[in-house]
Length: 213
Image (cartoon, rainbow, N blue to C red):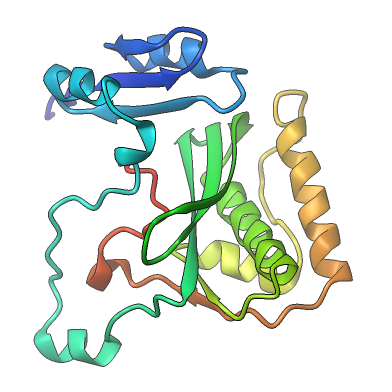
């Protein structure tokens, strides 16, 4: 069995800031801390260097990426439409600490962000991100399209229902409060926004990615 690679966790905003050598130590700093900012790194040097900079300079960064598709397949799919926003979620565990955000696809400028929440799932976060994006674009009377890398979230939005199997409890009440509001919004609003699947195999990670994989 291959040994799991060690990670180092940089916390820019939390109960304590700094570099932590275990996920449990990092989790203690971000749990119940509104607007916590953190990310894992593969080396201690990278984690310390990142701490000296800005959190937003280190999330949503594509690693070196090369598509395995043929030239013909790449040409068929083409490039993303940059008149768009992209949404994504991150969950440390399933369930685990969850957050989501939306960014401008071209510039990666953050447009909205929610979390971290104490307990959620990636699918719930992706669903909330899509509905938040729909409301955001409607509020700004925008004709931009929206990208997500979650087919599950796209399905839930179409059905106007969150089909998560996560049981409701005190820890995830703030998340499910948002879910209830999101479902209510879908049932009471119309929208013209086109939602498309981000072609990860061609374009790399979605621009809203938190870079924690």
